[in-house]
Image (cartoon, rainbow, N blue to C red; front, side, top):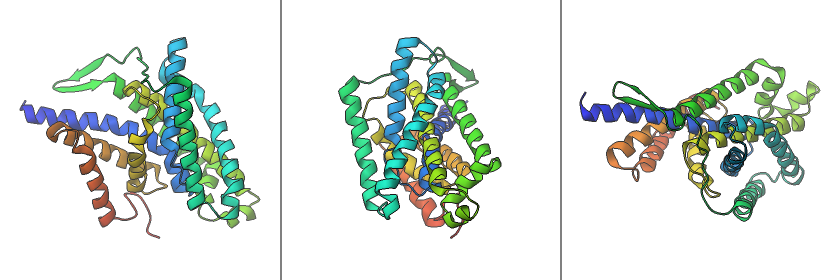
Length: 293
């Protein structure tokens, strides 16, 4: 096989696996930002918090990091629900969620990052899963399990979340809460309770993304900064509240970044990827699967 073609195919496959990580990171934000209209700028910090907790628990127990991330989701759901209660009481209820609410989440992000540095230090942490060193080969294409397994778990979690939102009464209420609160009240549904539940789910998804992240790469307290622009770009490209669009945008983003890095160097990959974001928004402002207002 031609070396350039082999490099391209491996770049595409690796980009799809990287897109699985982006999809896991962006799925929770798609709920909070797209469905609830809560601009949680601290979402990547929660993902890093989950990643570092998983790394510490893995070091203490040896349990697979992805299993640990699943076991952490109830605690992260409770944390997210508690944070939403504070956010609603001091900002959303008074109509101050635009600027003051955004500043609140900046503060939450800063508290998480500084708290992690004070608690465990600035060093990088990594969870060396049993399959992390295994690579499957399909001809000239490499499939590293340290990226394949987290990607499959991420897609399974997103699929389950999509079924919950589409098939359950509570899921449909979550999808409707940002569109028409008064209609929910007429159905005797408390919109605040629904948003508290949904925001908790978004933070629980951050814990799953953290488990995937710490298997793929080392993580420190400041690693969330790398993902802030990427996860918001993925959610916007996908169409805000569309999980299917979020996955498609994450895969596209991962492929563009990885192929660009393979041929032109990693310094070019963010510029090209965000250039594609601008192109998509110029042609289709509502994103891949978004609806025209």
